Length: 461
Image (cartoon, helix red, strand yellow):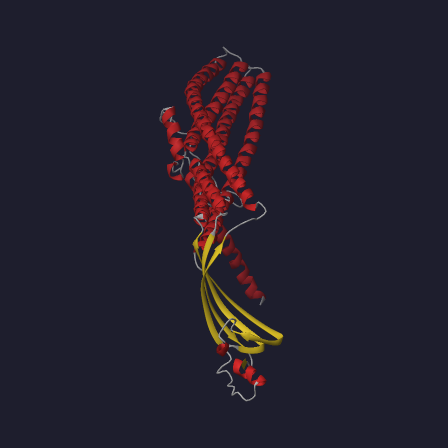
């Protein structure tokens, strides 16, 4: 047994190590992948979809009022004295017993209520459409929020890469300065200044890394992703600027027709109008058609003739042929509401107030949409201007840094000028990275404000 374990244990260990080494690394996640995952797993979006199903259930229950209603019922009772059945039948059909069993099938069908139930059904259907449009808007917001956090993470990555390049540059400069100090061509304080600036950049890198991790955590939360996200595919911000957006009037017109939340609020207004109509007509008469099939029975009934025979023994009395008797009934039931303690009046007042609230909410939403479109356009224009200016600034900073390093190597400048040029270049590069990412985010924000953002419009990267 020991020999067997000695042979098997190393083989098992080697297999486990090989399996661990051969396990595929988690695939990188692109922006399109992140949005697709969020659309499939976001708890907020699933809650919106559940709201649609809830409202569809209300439609089903409301529509039931227009369909025939059928109930089965049964009853068994025992009394002290004999009771006759079926009730109201001719004497020759009557039977008497102290134990009575009744079974029935009752059908009821609304014939006319002046459209009150239909109005309530139309209102419920409008609310379903409102929920669908609201879910579409929630889907758009989820696409934007996922893309924004993804791009925010990429912006942190841009800044970290720029900081790492500056660290490498400062270390290279420190090596050259140390050589100059060793050769007596520079003073030790120059090396100290470089080390101080290097520590500042490394401290900033630590802060940026903390921000990147926080952004990743927020992205995972929005996506509904449990655990650590796989590595995000890094793609630099596009070098070119996006196309100039359409005229503001065109964008506002597109938003008025494309925004799902505006469509949702329009459905809410129509639903409130139908609900008010239903509340008003609920105080009008209602006509129902009713039909019943009944079966009566008992243990040992006495016929009408037998009961008379107990009083007149000379008359022949035949017992009933069987214990059960079937019956049916057709009729019309009319309900005229007279007084309900002002319940219907309160319902009408509440429905009218809800309609007014829906119209005011639509007005507010229209104003907010116009503000969002104008704000998004202004942000995009500002981001485009910043990118154009900062690209020139980065090019100028690179030229100045190159010149200052040459001057310092030739002994015609001091280290402070080199470090200032390094700092200016790092600042310009950081601002440019942020501006380029802000152009992407502002473009998505404009699409969101107009209502045309969609996962299919996102770049596959």
